[in-house]
Every structure is written in structure tokens, then in C-alpha cells.
Image (cartoon, rainbow, N blue to C red; front, side):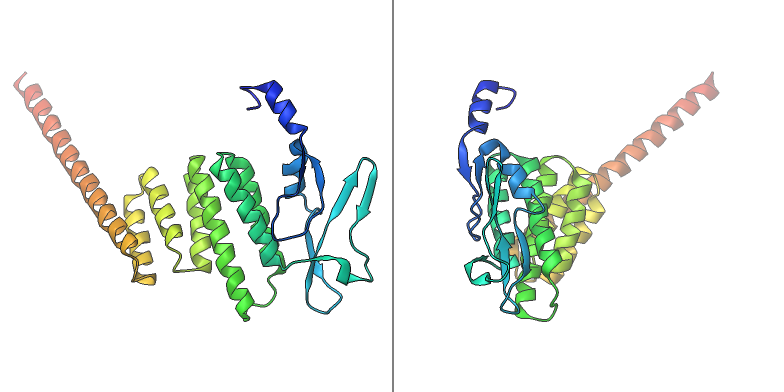
Length: 248
């Protein structure tokens, strides 16, 4: 829109909007053109230890021209907008999904990254059930960011994020399928097969992974067969050329 309809883009950027994060009560309001900057800001949505000894509160800031007002009192956390790090990360994920669906891939990647950062910063308990949820959500965020990298044809980055997703949730099917497709794009056919074999071993009930593995094996074998035929043809061509030279 910025390049195709610059006037429409300028009008859109001046429309007043509120923070779209559904799981937190952020009171930010401003121009649509400033929304992405607000969403990825390191200070707009911060998670900190609350006054009840364990809850998490979200710091929200209202900007009205030159006036900046904090929405909570340091000594009264009951008035703060409360949310867990998981709630905040879910909000970033949902907003990133919206950006992805509208093909705003760079903005989607920034928001997935923001969600990952929130969870990694606040995941201190590695044994609780909440930590399990955190790991699963972080895995989803990595896999979604991998989908962005694939759309941008950054296949190595896609594979790296899929590795990270699988390390957190070995049964997450989408991470295996996205890594498989990225390996195909790079011509890494053996790695594609090995990755799906790993996925089938971790998730034995996934019919999708089994089908993908069968396809990957067929692609790899076809490629290897084509390579063998090409080498044979080259050897035959070289042999005929040598025989012709000898006759001359």
C-alpha cells in the first residue's frame, strides 16, 4: 500500500487505534502508523513481579501528546492490568498471525520474536505445569516464525527455528513438516528424509508425517536415480569422445 497507494497509506497511518493485544489490558492509543512500533517496543508491555509475591503485571503507558501517564501505582498492584507472560505471548502470537495472514511477513516475524522473548525472559520455573505450557507456546512461536522465514525464502533460518521448536516440543508436527519443506527447497533431500524419520519416531500417531516421509523418500530416490543416470551418460559421452580422438 505504501508504494501502490501512497495517499491512502498516509491516511491509514493517521487513523486512531487502540492496542490490539486481547489478553492484556493495554490502554495505548495512537496513530495506526505507530502501532507496530508500540507492539515491538521493549517498554510498552513489560512483565514484572507483582505485589502479591508471584503474580505478573503488565506495565502500560498512555501517551497523550507530551503527557505520559503510568497506569499503575508501584504500591498498589491491585489497580494494574494483570496478565501472565503466557497471556502476553499469546497476544503477540495472535497479532502476528493477523499480520502473517495479510502478508505483512516482516511485522509478523517481529511480533513472533517479541512473544518468544517474553516467554524466555520470564520462564524461571522449569518443573511446573506452567513451564510446560510455556515451552509448548514457545515451540509454536518458533514454528510460526519459521513459516515467515519460508515465505521470505530464508530457508536456513526456517530450519533453525524448526530445530528450536522441536527441541521444546518433540511431538509438534508442523515444525517437522516446515523443516522438511525447507530442506527440499535447499535440495537437502537426505536431511529431509532424516528429519521426517525423527518426527515419525517422536509422534507415532501422525499419519501426515508418515505420508510426508513416503513422499520425501520417493523424491530422494528419484533424485539419486537421476544423478546416477546423469553420471552414466557423462561417462558414456566421455568414452565416445576419447574413442573418436583415437580414431583421428
